[in-house]
Amino acid sequence: MSKSIKWLLILSGSVFAFVFALTSPTVHLYFMQHVSPQVYATSGMVETGLAAVMASLMSKESIRYKMRRIFVFVLALDAAGYAVISLMGMDNATIRFLGLAVLSALTINIWMTLMMDAVNGVMSGTKLTDFQTLSRSWRLWGTVAGSALAIAVTGILSLEAAIWLQCGANALYALCDYKGFVNISREVLT
Picture 1 (cartoon, helix red, strand yellow):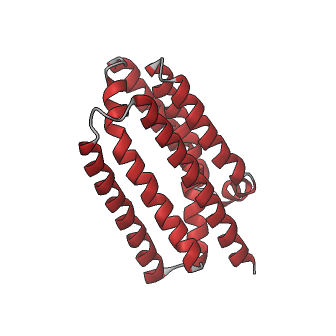
Picture 2: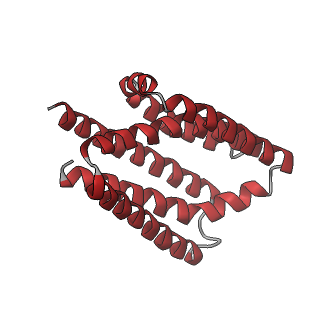
């Protein structure tokens, strides 16, 4: 994997973590006030159950092979679906919780498994560990920085702005991962 693709993947994950750490206090506090415990528990159960089914399916190479062919569609569905559900869910927390539970369980499982597969195809051993650890550390630092800024902007960041920032960060992350996936795939095939 080229250095530019390596850093594209690392930095996009860090930006995503930063934005979600910055915006999540505003979003979570608002929506937790507008959803019942039953809906919250149901969305968790639905997400976990569907994620378990998807993880089981994605454990088969034949399924991953088919999913690689529609990876761009999965990423587009995730980015567009996240935006639509988030924006529609501003007026109805139940839509947001249940919609994101289903979307996350389906698309994130495919997305992250295929990215893991791609990276594992070009790295192994200590180089893979180095990349994973560096990537995780940058995401954690992004979270720390986003959380620090969230403390400073408490009460200033509107719900709408927070949701738009999350939608943008998710779309950027998907776009960067797609570029990384395509470049890594070319590298493996050549």
